[in-house]
Image 1 (tube, helix red, strand yellow):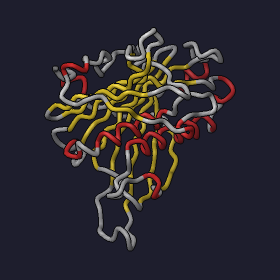
Image 2 (spheres, one colour):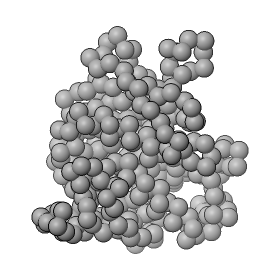
Image 3 (cartoon, rainbow, N blue to C red):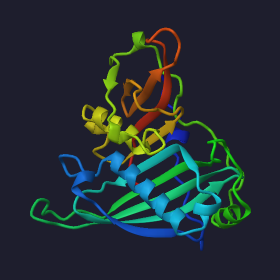
Length: 280
């Protein structure tokens, strides 16, 4: 099975437009964010992105005018990994948009500190991210940004004709052709938000489980891409299908399609974790 074309999956994320407005907030790396080696996990990075988005909305009028957004895709470029303890700075701006959706860029930097548990000095961390956000109405349908929101966001970027293009393979291979067998991922009640949707960060808990067997992909610069294709609600069983290639892990989180056969599955989310050839 071929990988996603390299120009798409490893293309650098756009930088901030000179002089563009951005939102900035600071956080702390907590012990609940890290693995046994004190590396900040990918699901923790996703939570930082949710927090800065919520804080950004609260700092504007979007909570009244454009309050409902869903994430279609998240790209996380771990260039220099974060670890505990550290102070994290998040800068958020619009990298591209159309009338109904935006690419929101978040640059995360970490100033690492030392303590008795992690006494060695570490270089500053850098994680670049981009998320495809869709503005929706209270029925969950794509909706035009208000004039004020469009004016504010469009001033941050010269790309005003953003279109969706999938970066991960949406169709999963059949299990008969795979070396790795399907596995079950068990969801918890705490994985769901007040709207009974699986929290975006919870998808990456399944990825972290899988990466325990593929540590070589994340021992240097790497990129994660997760595309959310269908909602997952409480009580849904999750089947994880995966393909390991030399520099990449592909995953599909699959749910029952609703047909008569319980073995008839559909892809709810697709994931790729790709080793970057070198740090940016």
